[in-house]
Image (spheres, rainbow, N blue to C red):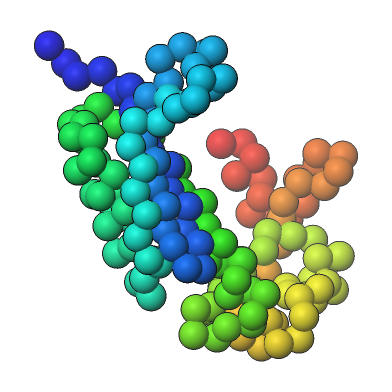
Length: 152
């Protein structure tokens, strides 16, 4: 008999701690009960390598309640880690970003990262390339190569 996928795992990566909960909502009204469908919770310090911290939190929560991995329907991850890096303009945790824009002439006159604070633009602005094409507001297809894409 196949194992039903009934559990949901939620992870929040914060600046200080990484929290994990395992949920098994039994019915829609369970959200109003004291445990709200929470079967397990685990907290661990946030690690410099975010993936390691997420793995440790999930493994800790699973160990506390002993659910089979095959019964996990979904894992959702939220983080303030990225937001903190942006707010602090932390070049140790931010990387260059490449931007590929499918666009018309207007977009080319508005460079990527133009509305970023200058310090973030310097940290994150990687290679930028423009490709003619896309859909106009009237849903007409500009650019020669775009016709093939629109036909697909």
